[in-house]
Amino acid sequence: MPRALLIVLDSVGAGGAPDAAAFGDEGADTLGHIAAACASGGADRQGLRRGPLAIPNLARLGLSQACELSTGRPLAGVARPDEPLGQWGVARETSIGKDTPSGHWEIAGRPVPFAWGYFPNTHPAFPPELVAKIVAAAKLPGILGDSHASGTAIIEELGAEHVASGKPILYTSVDSVLQIAAHEETFGLERLYELCRIVRPLVDPLRIGRVIARPFVGTPDGGFTRTGNRKDFAIPPPDGTILDRLAGASRAIVTVGKIGDIFAHRHTGREIKPHGNDAVLTATLEALRALPDGGFVFSNLVDFDTEYGHRRDVAGYAAAIEAFDRRVPEIEALLGPGDVAVVTADHGNDPTWSGTDHTREQVPVLAFGPAVVPGAIGLRTTFADIGETLAAHLGLPGSGPGRPWSFC
Image: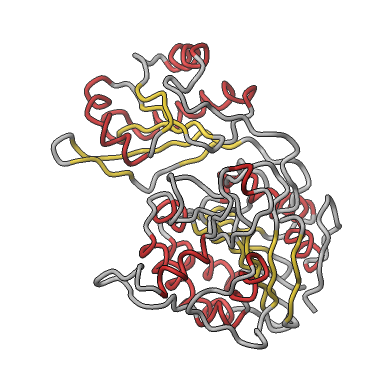
């Protein structure tokens, strides 16, 4: 039986979403703007990278053609082979959102069937009755923050007061999230996780997608730094994802990175959660090497989003894409005769865009493997086509709105 690998490059969008204006993102183009900055010398950084975006492996699989299909523009400074060696195309999100859960659930075959709830960009941002319930249920002395904020900025602003008072820092963004920052040592990491578990059902009636634990360490004098112990507490996805179907067929499932959190740990098989893109990819390759026939590995590389997109770090984002590109041959080397790998994204996070939040974009789709016939797969009108195509490849029953294309 064939095996399959699905890698989500978190936030590596390809622009061109027809409804981007409704999200304030008309013209956003994560890959296109990064490539343009690299080609013009605007993403050079001493000791990190310089020159045009160097992604020869993704280019030979068809990434530039995919971006051109999405926006009408090839990637500046990136090779564009006449006949790519992979299948290439673009997918469009139908869910109403531009965040991680909606993107991943739709990729897995199930678009979000409801509109997410959001907190207003006001101060306070959270309903007073919600704050009162959180304080009472968790026996807190109060909260800090209560606003839209950058996670790194708010811990610098309020970290010292948090340590002194014991009040956790609660904040949000334009996404459907409630984030809770607390010091790993003075507040306690397990206590932070338990606080998130308490808050999760309290925000369910508001349709908030994720409650996110954002632990940090440090001192008021030396500064504070977020750690790799982030944990997401998400609403469970709709029934019928590819993970549900794999579990129903008793197939081997390995999820790497934050996939377990995104899918509320439902049918996420053996979960591996390394810290950092390189470690996640290494764990992904190890999982693929040991994967039995009919099995599935599902990975998320979150650094593109958290370390570079949200921080509007163009050079760092470009270097991270180049680092992934250098490891594509390792993926190819582990694919057996019937195996297939799909590389895609869940939304955009254009580091040249205003603000610090996600951008509503279409995403590239690249598929490759020994038996995959190269060529264009066109514009897929829902991310769900990805999950349905992988399900068909693995011999699972079809379900939901996605329409599979053929790998062969």
